[in-house]
Length: 385
Image 1 (cartoon, rainbow, N blue to C red):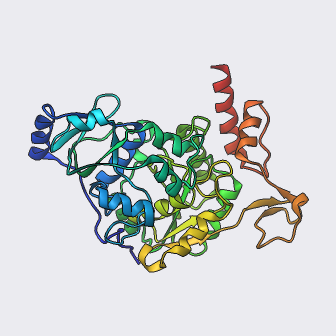
Image 2 (tube, rainbow, N blue to C red):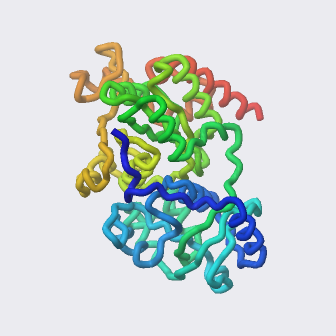
Image 3 (cartoon, helix red, strand yellow):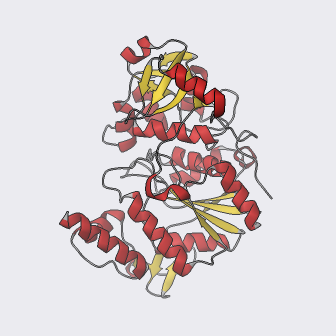
């Protein structure tokens, strides 16, 4: 079974040919808005339909509905209030249209500016992130943006350079075509922003017993400064697929979103957008998209109970915390092992980063030796630099 995009239609906001040339010419005389890294990611995903049904940045009615209810004004589930925030000075300079540029000056899109409005950042933070603490990385990013939101459709004329892994940036339409070519009717999506380790591998392989194929979809947009860089993580994913997965059961592709560390709401976002990429199932594990102690261990699973499964349209696979079980000599969860805490080998992300910084070997119970070697080599290169 193939799956419909969220809202029923895969949006395409890319402009080509004569229309692109006309817009590029027009943009030279339009007020200019310079997007930050997160806004560039949002625009890129809107452009290719990854954020279907959005055709641009939210107007005020949709913004307020999303903040309060996790739905657009028409009732469609949507977790993030994606208006385009700018400074008051920038907003005052803009008329009916604006030229959207990347931080390097590249023209990316022309926007129909239909609305300008204000949204209380602290209220948005409390509703979306469940905290208004400026130490939370997602809240800090929100506070750093402007006070005025622009709403309106976008006409995208260009996209940013995708770097070393450009061939892994498969947009929703071509990725759906690839699944069809592979004969996959059911596809499970796996979200990660960390180097892949045994717990991740275990969850994906458990899910593969239920579906035709897996989309390993690492996030490569903006992350916290202490998160391991995307290039290193991609090397890890390649190594795992080469050595430990059947060649015809998994696809690796980059997910261009920025991390917001919004926990439960971000889990909804990750599921909806993976539905647009063609996934019929989506894995939500322990502390999905969490950071620090802002969210409960399984809050990101429980939030799905607030929606009728039919309106989300993607099946959520909920997994408990996976660990290496010393007693049974393999991966397990509390559902499959009667071991006590003393028999469970678990490493936190903080501990892993600390071990790498100190030049310590990562144990085989945590990750495959090929992955450990990549992480150690990258850590040594950073230290020597």
